[in-house]
Length: 122
Image (cartoon, rainbow, N blue to C red; front, side, top):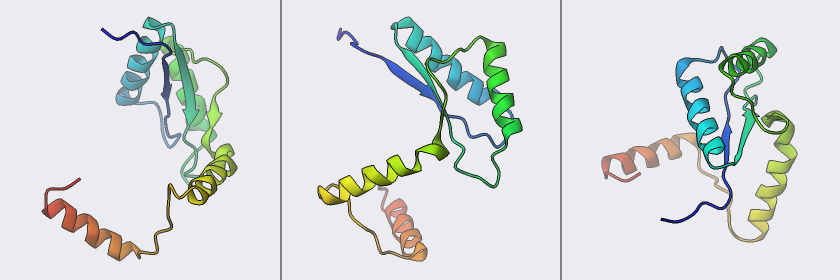
């Protein structure tokens, strides 16, 4: 069996509501896996939906995780504060030829997705 050298898991809830059972289960499994392998369990708050994300929901998620005993390692990362990092990486990928611009309209993308589904492709 292959030995795992470093395990890092993360839980990334969207703060658009309270922590629900499915989110708690995901957090628990990731926390258990990280702890079992002496790894890290990170928390990233997916707060990019600025219209629906609330501080009340963030507090409820943090309180719920605390109540469950699911402590995360390090500081929680707020996705909305990472926009420049994402833009920098996208620019780097474009420069390196590892990404490309897509000029398709939303309608064209919908048509391509439908055609792929009908053909049994992902």
